[in-house]
Image 1 (cartoon, rainbow, N blue to C red):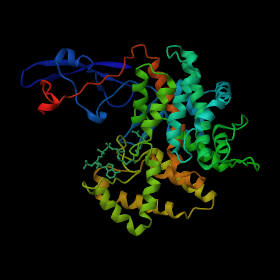
Image 2 (cartoon, rainbow, N blue to C red):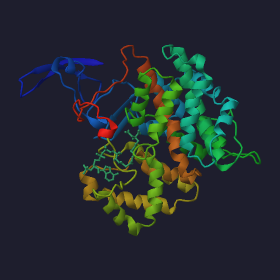
Image 3 (cartoon, helix red, strand yellow):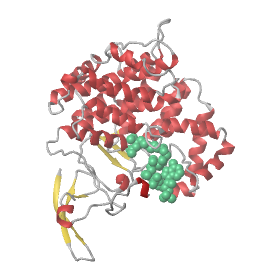
Length: 433
Ligand code: SDX
């Protein structure tokens, strides 16, 4: 990190107290005020619910310019990675900061491939869920339960054990996700095949049935790979911040990633792709779009236009652009280009982008707006959409967790608060209340 000599001085206009704090400058993006001495020297906390103006860490993994609609992983633009990279190349880039050469890629892919199978007891654990359990509930439970199978390999201060845990998590997430799906539809689990790519392997485990041969579709595999790449990492979003905070207590990596899955599940975050499909199905036809836009703008109505808006992007989400192109390609290849939901989504996008409210508040389609349409066309039920997001985001979570765990200056995360409760008072016995 390139610190500069710049400083800022804060003055309390009542008491006249001042404090001078260093400004820190990264490679790109806004400078940050280093407030680590603020409370000790100035007696105040900062106040930033939702962390809209707070940098929680320094990181080399991902850069986002929300104003310009830029997303870089290790300096590489997301549209180039989505177009040209295998998902495991991106996993390697997020973890090590460089795209792998052929030998590195072969070694990393081989490591991941060798760890795609699950301990058989985990299949028994999974079968303890109800058949109608939401697959995200299964992911939270089974991924957390992995802690019970590697208890002798959980020393997070050992880089080799962190590397192995990262390999195991990236490798096993597709297997668990496919099993969660098969379990809900009552079909037998399909074991991983080491001869297939990451995306091909996941599609086969999800859609193959023992009764007939499974033919990989290059179009669907390419679309799956692209969706995984587009969802791999995204700076310090809610689930990644959950992973960092859980990891800062030195919890084991499986419990930490399970916490990230739980946070991603929310409809304001990774659950939005499922919510978009439900919203489009509820809107039903183009003539009801205005009614839903009115609701989205009504402060007294909790309805939000799902798949629109973003904490950081105040311009187009670059991932949404790639996904929109991908949607057209996949739907055309599958012969469902005139899918009414896709047509409705494009009409809704156009009307919203021309609407003053959405223009003024800089609300553009985000990564979740088109992903669900592609996933539905590929044959996934809406309940699996966020599961796929979690499979992809595991690459970013383990990279961010490794970056944090490898930082010797790392402390346990422990924010403070603005207390607005009661002053001290004495206990009142029940019969006197
Ligand atoms: C993801 O952080 C990441 O990087 C996340 C993610 C990743 O890759 O990890 O990109 C993935 O989570 C994408 C976002 C998916 N969520 C949705 O699509 C749900 C719908 N979107 C909204 O809930 C909302 O836009 C958020 C949660 C995404 C962002 O909310 P913010 O940044 O807290 O913004 P806000 O709620 O303060 O909204 C600002 C204004 C508000 O109006 P005012 O109070 O200023 O009058 O915009 C309005 C909001 O009411 N607004 C919307 C809206 N989103 C914001 N109004 C209608 N529809 C919307 N979708």
